[in-house]
Length: 462
Image (cartoon, rainbow, N blue to C red; front, side):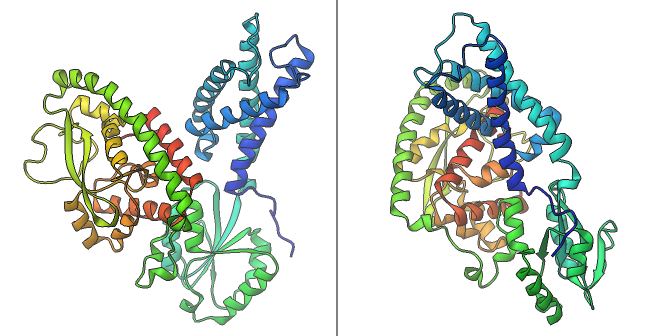
């Protein structure tokens, strides 16, 4: 079936484009430099050139993830791109140059290193400018058609319309939306969806509510025909997960088990054993780091954070079991004399030095002891206090589901929605936690680790 504006880049395709073309431009730039100039550091005639390229790409991808170079929001902004690119290229070049055996031998003329660094930097800048100018252009965005009742469509638009990779051009519903005059409305009665797909250049259809809500078998029949012709059709829940990386609250209904499933990793003994080995290994390293930090934090505490060095608090762990979490104290000593209260932005109870500890996440380092004891893991939902858990379980349905896995030193909700000072914020974090529980795997674990490093480096702690 012919469609207008059939050429577009989805979110995943844009991310692949950024990674692949960055490397292609880098390699091309280095090759041209060695071909037309007296550049001997990166010799493409060397039998080790493949090894060099692989190491360079691995470093570039690693530091690119840490400094958020491949985030679409970063890639579409000149300033953010430049900032991330400078940091990524600087660290990539520095580590690559001083990596023994798997990188070229250091040249006697140190200017060769400067040429190398500026060449890969200029090559990637050229690709990013091309991306912003052409690939990020609205003509390459996906066109979406929404089908559902007015309430469901309005709810979806409120949640995801800020994502710049989406363009919701029209909707089929029972009633026109007053707050969205820029979206074309088509009444459900006698609508020809196939004609709309061609006319509006629709790339994807999102079903926002069940067809039964319309009591219209005609809509269902048309969707089946379009599906047979290769039109991409998604449910609203699937669409929201893809766009927001959290589960849709629509899945948490009375019969939630029909819609929400746990990752198979929960029953994979190899995965669980590997995770535990990593927990032990990194917690031992973390405890060594803790021993190094203790005298420094102790001395600074004497100056601007007078009181006890550590803070021990009850938290709820896996299967609802309580344990005592250990942290560096960041608040005044009598912070909760009137009872347990959520920490909030600009909380006056946090001392100036405590704020630094929180921003850098240093206050969390003592929790490596909890990880070594097996009460926590490196990655998982953040453990909450029993007083808050009791309240949240009463106000947020299915909040207890997050206790199916061990709590973590860091987690998906922690890096995606790091700030929570209300029941509404906790509910938002729950959707991220449950997404992790649903999709849990080593790749997602690695992604959380990298995002955590980014959070620390950019001081996004609470």
